[in-house]
Length: 389
Image 1 (tube, one colour):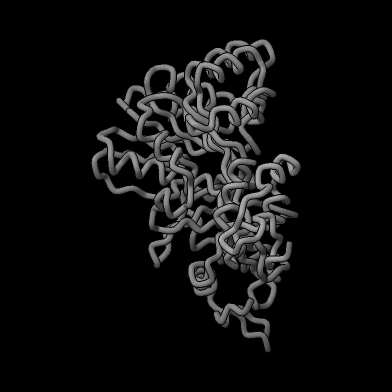
Image 2: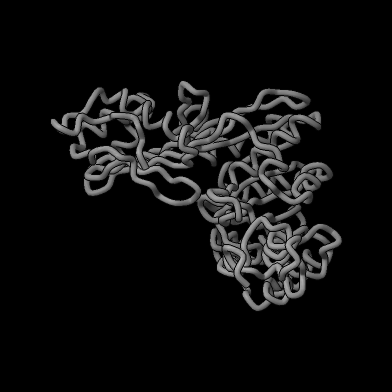
């Protein structure tokens, strides 16, 4: 990739102004459609474009002092001490283009490095994200309960949650409180009123924010990430007391999400947590972004578990292994498995069969699901990349 930024004078190897370099790299993310920027001592900067790392055509950043100087232009001065003490810092930054960036600065081999995620200034809709209709129905019809968006890093969880919150904001009269580390998307009040609280700026920790949140008369509570016992327990309790709670959790699929939640708690508390979850859970939506048929695109494959009477019973009795079958048998309610989603994407010609097969949790089930489905070209939908059968 050629950046066209002219950031270093290659003949002398001397850097230009550190602020110019930093801001040019951030602005370049928008021009190249990059989701992430990686800055490490000894390397040229790297962009992540459509899921792949691409090196920016400039000289490596050889000196740690210069990289620290670059990052000093975006690190909040009032929070630099947190990095010095812990070797890690999360914060957000708003660029001159209006785009926001989620920044992690971390110490590695004694040097300051950084991973920067670009958050587009426009909040996407469900349609723009190509999410199934059940996502909208979840926030349209539920007035309370815990809604978890699950997936690995880079699976689009933040964008999905932003679309959910913006839909509520546009269509329902509610008081929304967000607790984020850091704030990513910013919302302008429409039908709802919104308070966005950032860890490290507005409140010191998630635990502190959640301790007082129910006293602030919220209807909807958004927790940026369920990352520990205190956060998870507060989310469950808030959902049990009549609030809609939205949050993200790092996990691969719906059944594994329960295992992940229970990891936060000692074994003797699992029965209590399962009982609470069976009552408070509204939905778990898992997603992965996979390469689309159009070059450079990524499409969400989704799995949705809704908490009906059968699911409640399975949660209480530790029968998580039965949940995939429940999703398959409850499609009419809006539930869907990754296999269902992948088969649908193949049928719609949004992903190639061989790509879907690579990401399928059960390849035989996927092959069975797509068998005999016809494409618009009249061939089997199970064609591989490039149209070969």
